[in-house]
Amino acid sequence: MYDITEWKHVFKLDPNKDITDDQLEQLCESGTDAILIGGSDNVTEDDVLRLMSKVRRFLVPCVLEVSTIDAIVPGFDLYFIPTVLNSNNPDWIVGLHKEAMKEYGELMSPEEIIVEGYCILNKDCKAAALTNANPALELEDIKAYARLAEKLFHLPVFYLEYSGMLGDAEIVKETKAVLTDTTLFYGGGIKNPETAANMAEYADVVVVGNAIYEDFGQALKTVKAVKK
Image (cartoon, rainbow, N blue to C red):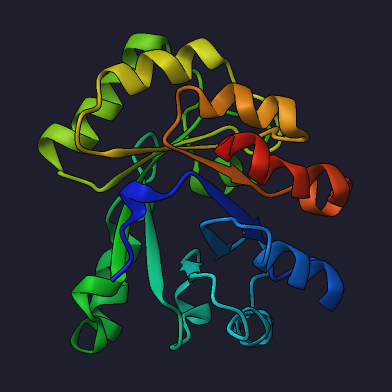
């Protein structure tokens, strides 16, 4: 069983985007705490399976972030299940999750499942449009969602998702201050070691995704920056 409370850095790979075998090897052997596979659109079972089979050759934990029931495949170390707390569509909070349990519930192993309480804060990102999220939140609203995730729902992860843009470090700091047991993930706009280190001051785990495909060398350097 993997202890996510000990993680600091995660690389997130989109199965719908291309990455060379050499780049994948460098990521898996970089010292990152996990490789997270997931995306917002055009995620297929074949692409997920192909990418997972390559990552599994290395010792790093391989995690599937489930965005569509059709792309759930066996063989991952952990399965991250997002529930978008600031969605206006109940399907993304509990509806799709019920359908997944209806189809796969008897096959699921509880120790492999991590539920993430998502708070999407970039109104222009694909994830916000897909989930009908309301990103126009005041700081007190964000903190309330964090408290809801920990105190009411007892979720292991609260995820501040800026997806494509760099968030406000002060918001990350204030959010972390209201959490004691739930692990705070941060994702969005991490393009180099400096931005990674800045967010790592407050977030428990920094997720690096788009930078892998935009500036691979800088993305690779974020591991040491977060773990210094």
